[in-house]
Structures are given as C-alpha cells and as structure tokens.
Length: 80
Image (cartoon, rainbow, N blue to C red; front, side, top):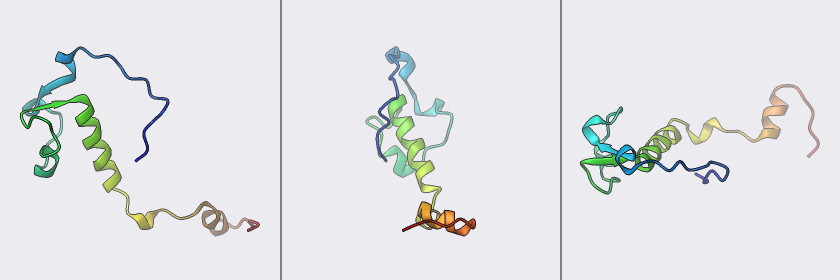
C-alpha cells in the first residue's frame, strides 16, 4: 500500500501514543501480535498498520476491474 504523502503527522505525547494491548479498542490476532515491537504494548503507528492490513484483506483481487471495462459495462463507448 503506498504511503500517504499529504498526511500530516501529529506529535503525540508518548504516553498518549502507546497503550497496553489489553486497552486496545479491537482484538488482535496472533499474527497481528507478532507485528508488535512489544507484545504487551501497542502504539498508534502499529495500530494504523494493523487496521490498514485488515482493510486491505477485505477486498478480493477480482473485485477490481479496469476503468475502461467499467465504463463499457455501463454503456459508454471508449476509444482504445
């Protein structure tokens, strides 16, 4: 997944950026826990990574079609 170039990073207090895994608002799988630097703590960047990976897994590669094909399916003519 490409990095977001125009997203500004917030400078969070380290105490706010890290929290115990037990206080995490979502449950972590065993494979997700392996991604953590410290398995008892999760920081904001690690949580963002895990949530992005989950979102990416929701889409099957077959769900995407080329734009030209989409336009043709909806009755428009496209020059190749």
